Image 1 (tube, rainbow, N blue to C red):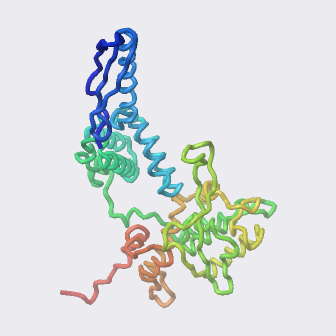
Image 2: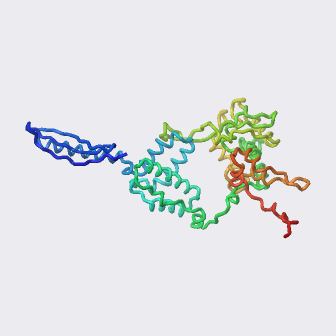
Image 3: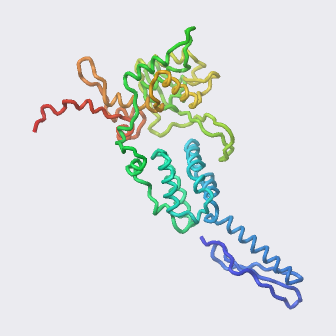
Length: 405
């Protein structure tokens, strides 16, 4: 696609009828040579018309030329037009947050066509030096890559600055922050058996009058025994629970997203009920006795009917994930347990099943990674092993006995 541009600034001439005329030549988007004609009673009048037209033409070219807009203006428009209709609301919120907090403050005022590979590298280095997590900076890099790929493919800019600004290698990134580049399985956060007992005790602690301190605390025990994600457990209806066959039917999830009027952010947050994270997330999860007891406890605390959430708010609606997380962190703090993300409960479930539990006869009862992947709703067991299971090297003690070479 060609770029509109002026070929002349116009010239005035006297016509045979005594009037003045002028012509401005330009090239349109199809690369065709076009002209704009003007007339008037005086040369000054025609010159003014041509000058005004040229100024308006230049302004229109700048406004339509993506490479001459600021990065903030251009990226914000790209997000609304191209990303908002094609991704989940929660995913869009995260992209917009990354742009507003990590990209715009540094590159937002720079003209798109002037952004260089050095600018990209400086941006990434800035957040690395500030101590931001590798995953956070990688999100910045991925968003910029997606955005500049669009500009290049649409021929809105001639050169992609991302080509000469690859993402910093994780080992180098962490080394620059004075951190060790540990294998992924070593970074998995889980609860120890002692921490689980302390957590459970705090969950059900009561005031002096016998009332529990924490509402819906049994929900966390249900998560420990099913490995459900936060959105999955909060999306459960009572009708999804089949106590007779000891199974949960997962069919929906709950997310908290920014309130919007179309793509425009308004104020506040709202709960959105929708599909699960992936196709494999829609599954049946078996219930052990601890999970069943947790469900009965939740129903005894609050029950608004079969078609209402298993973990409802005080009005029988869906519980806000932010409130659910805050309550979890309060329990951790009161129990004297170091801060762990709510997803650590899911990691603990996976780790326990794969590594196994020692039985009275000394044997280890465990499940295969594939079985655990099915329980968690993962598409492959590799995801489960790499990101959800904390390796237990203690199980290797003495394992080479009898294999002397």
